[in-house]
Length: 545
Image (cartoon, rainbow, N blue to C red; front, side, top):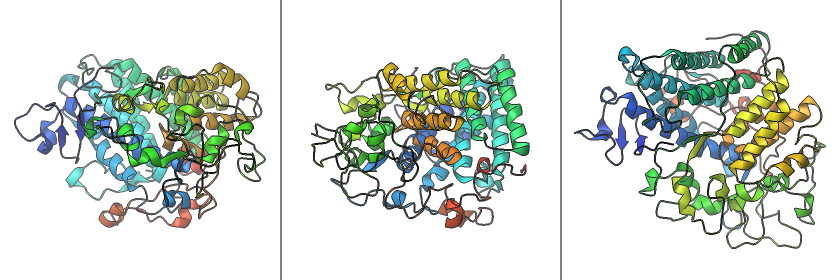
């Protein structure tokens, strides 16, 4: 991938740059948008929105999906709010606030002057990225500002739009982007400014198709008018836009380096170490859960006095009893530990470890999350500061295609092939072999490709959960809310009987946009069905605007 000098956006009316990337004669942190063109906005917007996905959203998804636990051997009280499900207007408010803040830069590219169409490719990429990130706002919050959003000081109290209306508008943005890519004859080359796909517009076209497929699959349980709309879009995706999807991971790298903390990969900085090599607290705090341990291990690795092999008591579904080759890639042994240990969410003791062993320091985040270093003993953790980030994994795209083919075989095909390709892509990402594992897991109902429709759907969600663990955790949580799969235990300290169906708008909205922001109660957050939930949970909602 082409690397550019590092660029981050700060407040939505200004930018700052490192290494003199902005060659101007005034303080670059005070630049108005009128003096910042798409070539400077694009890498800034790509990097800043990815950081929200990679850190805040990723962490919440991994904790909610019982992948990440706390190192209770060294810390107390970690993630109490997440475990207890204390979801209020201060809970992970940075997701809403920072996505809007940074998607604004994509909107500015879309609205920028475009004489003779020279900025067409910038506009196409901005529309695709806007659709990618705005979907998560709808999926986590339901109704959100759209038609009056991104106006800056011209409108600081935007109205909220119906969420499925926003979905339709964002799908229109994808149409616009693909039409630009197909038809523009005057667009400038953007390769030196595009820190994701290096200006390869066929790759951007395929990424747009993959994002649309995620939208359509999200609406898979819709009925009535929404289902008819979804089906027409699916037909067009295949027959108008070719049904081509990404064939490799969609990565991002603006030139991550060890020059200073701000220039390192955001996962590295938040979960591993500083640029100077000082380990973060998260590196010793985040541990594998007992759920993770049992899901990716054979029963022989469970403690002699381990709890039941049933995933959730009364479900009748047991863990697969297959050794997953990714287990010591996603997490690894704890510091100075020769065996792998896990912790039940909500427990105060380390409670998962091999027979004959004793409690000790649990595992920690494995370096295998970010290849190509493959966790060799000689590899320094600092090597990971410069690694690519991942906006979408190939594995995710393959599992989307597997589900689409399972649900709509008249339009999409090779469901089992895509399912197995997703596992293979995930194993390749972690530099482990997949063939033997695929053979073994395919004999396990609900974990491999066997059984009923629901069994296979659970298998897709289970494998997607593993593939996205530590990389894009929020996607797994949203898919869990859509399907109820994979079966995932609550923390033992949970104050609710189910995971939240949505998040609450941040306190800043209730203070500054009181007349427009919907009031959301705790009972609505955890209700099985409520009109405030994202529309794709509700079957046949009336078409809104």
